[in-house]
Length: 522
Ligand code: NG6
Ligand code: CA
Image (cartoon, rainbow, N blue to C red):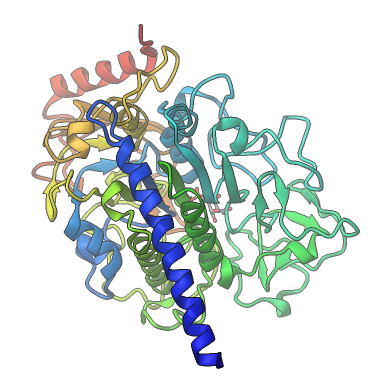
């Protein structure tokens, strides 16, 4: 046989194998689909710091996000969906536990050496889906602490972590991209670690002799903003928050992160195509430090922040395409959202401020990341499930990411355990676009708290600063009560607290009651 024939033969054999594999998957999956327990694959794509106005399907004009828009075209786009909080760690806590993070101390932005924040004695979204027969994975940014209070040894199995919380597979960046250690951890082990070059991490003082941004600024790809720190250990030509020594062979390269984690997600879905799977896919995009692949750099005309949005969109396209080619599209629910609102300068001079132009990352909302104004936690939220969710619809239903726990439990035919997810409501009808109202009210968190019910939003007074100079963000903090009518004044400009004291009183007491009221299910 000549080479051509041989390789054709190989291709045919390969195709037959592939087809029979896919056929087995499809029949295995259709067996799951009985009316009492529908078990679609579930993929949550959780972007980092992506604002309400950062996608073209939410009105972004400067660049296009066709792949994410495609999910909206084939699915349901929410105008009033919220992360629990205006920063990363608490929002992720809320998403995975179904519990407002402010109910537990120590759920603020976690350093890279924090111990595991999520309690292990209660269910998580992952563990309950595991019980429902799902293969579960977390891939991407974790930022919920790892290990015990005694500290983490990065050179042995790192636990407890995702595995103890119900994830069968994990491939994670431990904290944020701007925090050490800048290594991947796959199923408890640092990837590519050389045992002769062990990792030490400290957030108190310098460890080892690795260069830092402070001492060796000439080594940096771009400079950290001196008002924001980020000038400690240098990894991949970028200085970070925190010090680390060792682990050089395990360092990630920032420009490879998106492709690496996407490959891992696609491989996981491929390995588990024959059974329902749940992938919590938490991208590093578009958090700082931003350094997307070369094919995106300079392409948005908006600096590295815009380039990172292009990369995020491409990533989503790869996931969608992979599901298509595995013939899993119709049996997969994809959710795209963000952990908190947008920030432009979050610690590095990467030209995102200079090149922002007319773009409004928060759309028409006031504030941004770190803010109790709407931009802090009203985020993009799009869901697609072909055949089950009508294509191209929009909804104003009030939805919180904290509800996904109970909602996905209901979808997969499970009863919540008494102690699980006390703040999570089953909003399956809202998620599927059948109920346009959603929850009765929602509590928002930044430094302080706010409550929104119907048209009204009340922000609890506090004495924290009203403006974050470093990031140029209005935090929304005020020593006086604030009341806004979001229907007429989504931009929160007209404080009506003095005019409507009875509404202030009503919302304040509802918030107080909710703070005390941890529901337990019988
Ligand atoms: C802040 C960092 C910011 C970012 C943020 C966490 C400073 C001055 N700023 O404290 O750069 O890392 O924490 O972002 O250190 S989050 O999206 O993970 O919550
Ligand atoms: Ca974030």
